[in-house]
Length: 447
Image 1 (cartoon, rainbow, N blue to C red):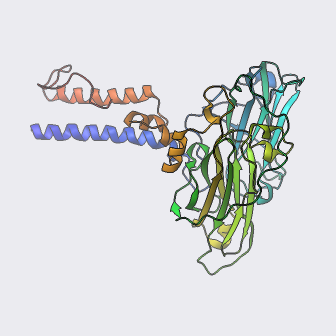
Image 2: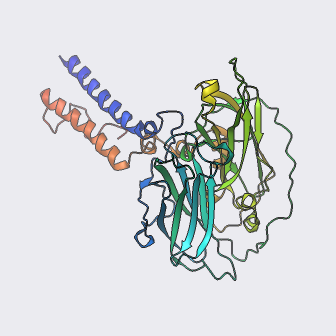
Image 3: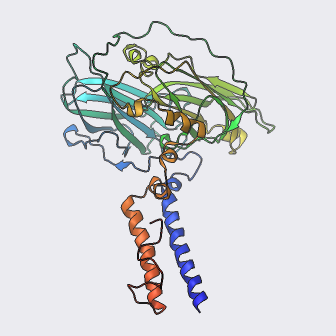
């Protein structure tokens, strides 16, 4: 009987732990149903956009948010800025499916004073790819000496506008929002006020090292870290794979995506079959490239970009301006759902070649750069291929927390296991508050 009771207690603990683990993985699973699913940041808070700016909900700095937007909607959110920091608000638009999209379909994000004076505006669209997939845009406030607008501290409006050219596009899109402020410059730092005139623009020699396998994530929060190398993965029609690369001050990033040949007999031509995109650490769009596919090997490379420099922000080109700070730069690879018609729904292998050139330079910021810098730990994470949440894990408790469960929930579930054990002991003839001889009066180890 004693052995039977021990087996029952063991089964009870295993059942509760299994339930705990099942809850822990729910956030990731919730967005993994289907190849086109996007993995939202599990820490994101829900927020509703307002059609009237005075009713807008406020976004806190550094906190991810989730919202929704319908065709043609113009939604307001609000942020509070100081009078010394450059600020950025990004919006990732996530369509409900990966079906066809018009050339001009997308979102426009602008940051405005409450009297509607515009600080900046950036739009993102599906472009020549003409298929729905996650796209990102950001707006920013730059503190400039001598400027007469958007320089004061106080409330600012964030306006997200959905632009839909197709009348058939009636579905609601999800949004992932984030507000960041750039660190202050070092005291006495002298910075240029004009963008660069030139930079090394020749493409580097192709990498010849051994190809390695590394699977991309389903969203920015799950982006797989990469360092220099040739990385092999697969992507299915309608799917987007996310990666991130640490790029420090003074460094240049180069990337090429090469799609493998099809092993089937069909050789149908599909224009803009694959899109390779680059976004900066504030999730602002930098550059993209597309390739067409006829069943044979094909590749697309990002155009050579300038080294990361503070002065880039003063350039008139959005591509150059976006290379304005160091940090994790995001690469994404999207495959058109049109390929499914001719080549089936199975994932197609591809190679992502990444090169970061030049020696890292000193940060211009005062103190900790936060997301706008690269640390030795970041470089180690890139070597290991971890995403941000994996890198943050340091023990068994954080494994659960990283899956989207708060510490309080973990403690409640842990105490539930302890209580269940106590009740089973009581049923076996032990006092409800007692313990077997030699037992501990604390919850089981690990809670």
